[in-house]
Amino acid sequence: TETILVDNEGVDYDSMQDSPTQNYATINPLTFFEAGRADIENANLSIDSSSDGGWFVDQTQLNQEHFYFEMTLTAAATAGANSGTSVGVTRDFLNSGADRVRWITTDVLTVFGTETTNWAGTTWGAAGDVLGVEYDRANTRVRFFLNGTLEGTVTNAGLADGNFVPLIQNSSSTGSSFLAFNFGQQPFVHRPAGLDDTNNLQTQNMPAAPVQ
Image 1 (cartoon, helix red, strand yellow):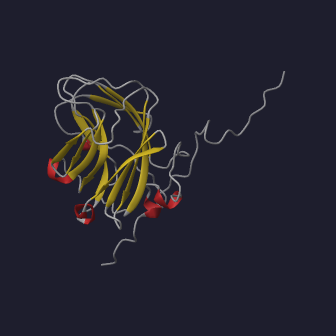
Image 2 (cartoon, helix red, strand yellow):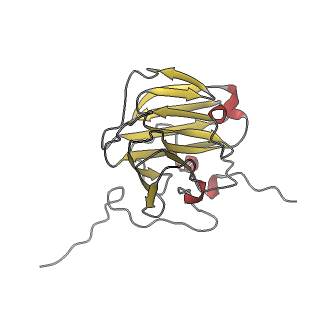
Image 3 (tube, one colour):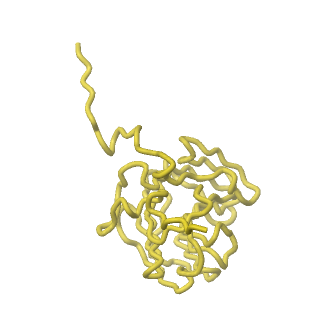
């Protein structure tokens, strides 16, 4: 018998360019906050979390003005005493309510400290759910997608104030989150129309550093 190797791009995807000039974002375990516990695996692109905590991407000088990323639930999220898994963006690697925009599994939206319940009219958190988040500084907006469907848009002037990065958090003290992330390392499952590789979170798409 013969074994035939087939290039299934987007299905079997174990190799991509990753160099000092084209370096993709990952989750940084050093940015873990709060008193929870998590296992960060798969080249810092997967998180198994059993209690309250949160993470940012690993680009400490990130200043990308328009980006998109996806978060896939590899197992169903379980809510605990507080709320559940949340995804969004935060300003300058800060975690105060006044600095973040996030959408929680229970359909609670928080925008710089203001909370809205039943925001999109749908909850999420099932195994296989794919959350897409687009940050657009020029249009001062964040768009949230669930399995390829636009669920809602946040427009706020504060989204142009500071450098924003992805925020991922298990907001439940007793719940669990099992998550996998794609910042452009692999083909996106549901990249919105109008976006392309220039919106991947990677150094090549960041503004040139100022020369001192």
